[in-house]
Length: 237
Image 1 (cartoon, helix red, strand yellow):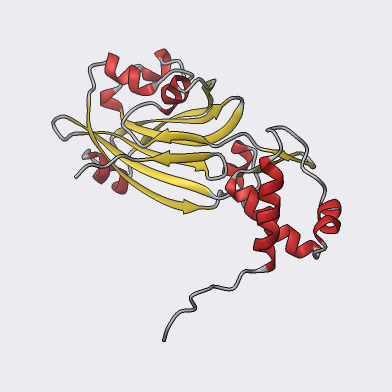
Image 2: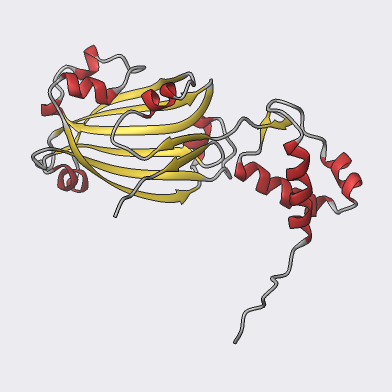
C-alpha cells in the first residue's frame, strides 16, 4: 500500500489558514470576529467554522474572556530545567507569582513512600499553588516533600517565593530530576482553579527530584495549560 503523496485538505483546515492570516494582522487583546460574521465572510457552515476556531483555541492564538473571544498573547516559552519557573518567567521580563491553594500535612502512602525512599506513614508536607504569568493562571503545581527535610516550612515560607530558593537556603542541593510528561484534560477542580474550560488541553509533568547523593527531595505534579505554555529542552550528543 502506498500513501497518497498529497493528503486531502479538509474544509475546516482551509478556514483555519484564513483565520491564521487574519490573526497575523491583529494584536493581542483585539476582539475576534463573531462566528456569524466569519461564517458569512468565508461562506462556510457554523460547524466547520467551529472546528477551525477550536484549533485556534488549542493552539493559543485566541482565548475566551467570558462570552467574548479575543486575540491571545504569545505563549509563555520556558525551558525544562531544574529550577523555579517563576524565576525563569521573571528573567524573560514577565510578571509571575504563585497563588496559594493550600498546605497539607499528611502521611506517605505506599506509592509515595517508594518514590521518596521513606517509610510508609512518614510525615509529608504538601504545598499546592497556582502559577501565574502576567496575571493569567497558567499552571497548577503540587509539591510533596518528606517532613524531615523541611521542618517549619509551613510557618516560615512565603508561598509567592521560589521553593527551590528556599530549599537551597536550607542546604538542600538538587543533583538530578526524572520527569515524565503527557497530555491530559483537567478535571472539574483543576479547570476551576485555572479558570479554564474543562476541554482545555494540559501538559502533565510528574517529577521526582534527587540531591547529589541520590536521595529524593520532592515529588511534584504540575499541570500546565497547553494553550498558554510551551516548554523547550536542550540535548547534546
